[in-house]
Image (cartoon, rainbow, N blue to C red):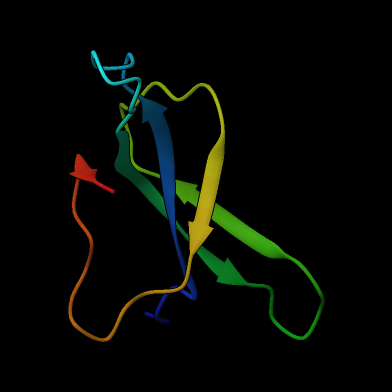
Length: 72
């Protein structure tokens, strides 16, 4: 199987804390592969996950796979 060129995440911002700062939580929901010989991507979402909101595609990092609910 080919390696994905992107990991697909849904982001969610927390409510502001007393200082007005927010955290963003990243949840991995799938991967994306390049089409064979044509422009475009195939996005494959993890089965059983309900997705809404903004999807973010990030290139895989060399230091391992970012996992669910990683605060940034």
